[in-house]
Length: 138
Image 1 (cartoon, helix red, strand yellow):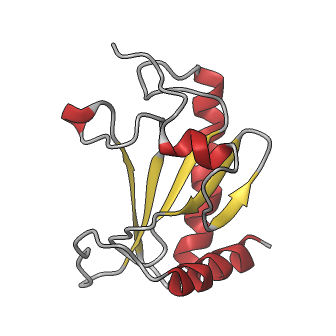
Image 2 (cartoon, rainbow, N blue to C red; image 1 turned 180 degrees about the horizontal axis):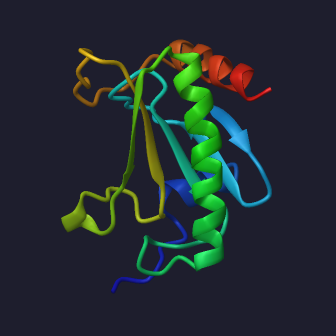
């Protein structure tokens, strides 16, 4: 298995080298909006400790990640009036993983509303969406 790359984009986000639209942060996790969302409220939740994917994450860190994902998922669904939810975890390129830092994709879903193709979102829209989720976390 490939070693963790400390220069991946999520590691850079964690170090503050790349801006993001944060919706939640605690001691062990960071949640922020995907800049190429396939639904409104498409959020990524990552651990602060380095781990490439499900194959090398420490069980305690995975538990912390799942707890944060649940909390943020509930808030995102409320913020966008979702009646369903998809939680995705990809491991390795063959499994669809694009960034080599374990992360969940949180997708608030609405019946009859299909996902969009991935495309860069307007940062003003993302800022508003992040604000809506943060409001639901209060």
